[in-house]
Length: 167
Image (cartoon, rainbow, N blue to C red; front, side):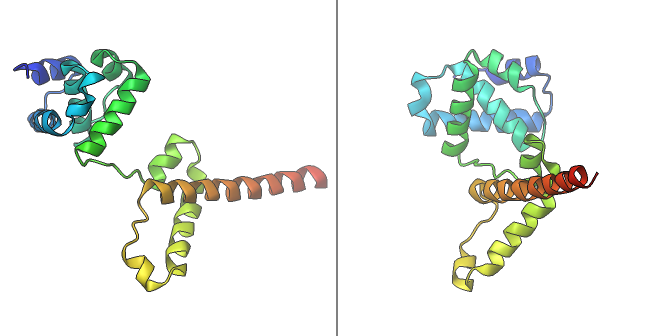
């Protein structure tokens, strides 16, 4: 591992917080042990960039993903794939919330409906199944949001059709 790589890259990314730098260096050390299988697809620099990305995300410090990809020297698809692999191998699986997912897909009007759907699904299950259930997993949040979007668009379509037919 090249000494000083994380601080140099952090400087180029505009990251000055010591907490983010320490976390990135920790992730880089862990990645050398746990992510050795990815070395065929990545370089030392790209590994350091991904560790900075993960550390900044962990500390709620937004970064420009396009610039991160460029700085890593990988194409976008490879960067995102390796980043997700790093995340999983380092045990940092991020569970995205309904609101974040709704913002990403521009359907924020369906958030409350999706939350209600998740709650009704959980309450419909027997107590034994509820104990080990994690409704914050992407499968559940994605399915709830999709169903909510369908409900919301169906109700807005009905309202539009009634207005057009009645006018």
